[in-house]
Image (cartoon, rainbow, N blue to C red; front, side):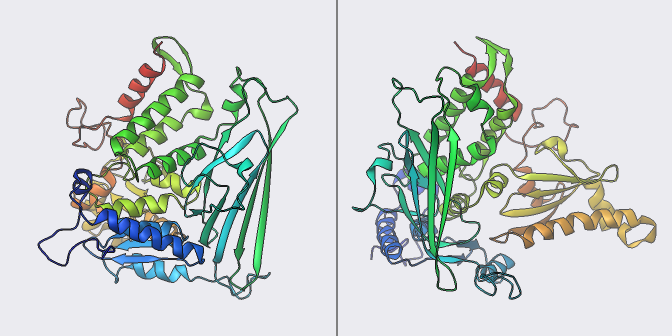
Length: 474
């Protein structure tokens, strides 16, 4: 029975991360091989595998992940089938275009079937691979002159089967510059990449979308300034996160963290302005200014930190990350925080312990959770029912606004996030506290600068100090 993830005997527990590391999970390897073969059969026949798992214990999503990933399916993980996370998410899977919508999509499902992607490039660079809900197609029709010998993700090809596809499906494609350094590209030379996406529309018609991109080469390899000016730090953070998540399938998390750190140090050493061995002179161009912060939060995220999560949960988070667009992926890596108070309109707040104050309400969006967090004073006033009095209509408005904004976020999202209302110093507050930069800890001298976070994790300030020191070393 190669599909087993645990024996029927109740004396055997479901495998944990420690069991996987120590090799104490006897069923995992056989089960993963079984489901990988099943995924290949499903993908070759354009079948989509979705997984809706609601249980207080694990169900084997870690082993079955390839079935969903390689067929373009969706996965929903919850505690109970009675939760809105499951019920509303299931309803949204089958959402349709409005009947009165102009155009050929009216009344049809918002999804496509039997999708595939082909990438063609000019000769100076080749396709290294793709990471996302796809499976590499390797057959005699593959045009090898477009394929790099270096593989990233699903590599060794320039064609992939996607299976199920919807407007939010996102594939990350990686390239390698193969032009020899001894023959520099002429200044007038342009680069081209063409993406051919084909799928069957819900109406039954076949559709082909062709997207062609063109750009200039930087002919002088010693001048990196044009590359720096075109650097997209948001997209770069998501691309790095996808590579890191993909490598978790075959490598230890500690090794991946070291690779992420080395990559960041090399990037800063190449593009920052500084004097050798002088960290105080370190300056990053504005095109790179937020990228180290993204990496800091990626290192602390549930994608690379396995504490207080099961293998099923870790697999679920990683599956969602590799199929979402840049905006949603950034929310997962670095959650958004909005502060509501009497002194100012709702404003974005730093994801930092100093943002927690007794007289404000915080709205945290982590993509998987939406948390409305009440400061200690706000929670006390609410419990005393001040909002029911006409004298405190502004307080009533203050309480309602983050709830309305939270509902707007949840109405537009798939999968539907879990909704949490938390109060400062109460147990539910941990969902917010664990995402904050620990600038104020039990070791801090000024404990009144914000919420005290009892942790030994380094803060963003310490992280940046070490980064600057290592980047400027000669």
